[in-house]
Image (cartoon, rainbow, N blue to C red; front, top):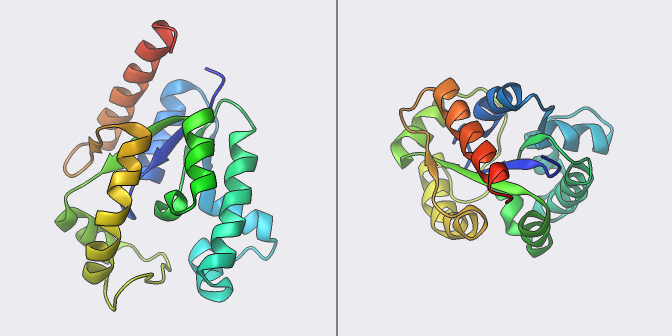
Length: 178
């Protein structure tokens, strides 16, 4: 496998959790794009802090540079932020140079995970997470679908089982010459 495996999906869909296990299953390095953003920006601030301080346009520019850098590294598993699909250049890069896996969950599960997550994540749309999901879900899900086809449902699945399922699917694709 020479191209990166890139996990996309809405906030709290399980990209980082599944990505870590998937990387172990495939024997590849795991990279979280949020961590790469913090390293690239140089201050060590978390991605949520960067978004709040830089504003969305500057944040998305930094995100695009970090994505391009990660994609150029070859075989690895990359967990992206939910908004990576907001820029056409990112969509083109992912279509051309990555194996993309879309993780999704029922809205209720995404909201419950969000409520339990202590990571600083500023809202992009609306005044609360439910409003944000109502605004972002319909806009982003078609973009994820355009990259990866059908989603892998993480609503109630066990993380290790999901990682094994994705790894098996990727190995089968490679075996067919994809």
